[in-house]
Image: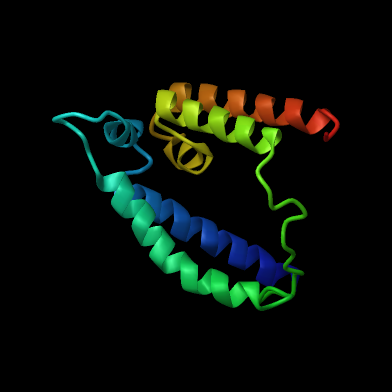
Length: 139
């Protein structure tokens, strides 16, 4: 079963990465074009997100009714479902970083071979931030 899990994770990552490359979302300039409202505004990010929602929504509804994944792993709902300060601050930091850099974690991994210095700085900063948050006790 471990091989099936590993293969499913690999295939999911491959499909995700290919989608990012094909849609251009691994290119920070393309993403930043969405955040700059004006004559050169690029709405393609909205279409990519909309397509992802259309594809994911029916599958999410099916998964929501199950207690195990197709590989046998337990499917659990989050313990916290409300909006709290930790969520709001994390979302604001994520959004600010995405708006400033034009890149978020998934596309960063895909874009690393194309811009190793810039994306490498982003990934190291992200991992350091993750490590700091993981060391803090939950409130």
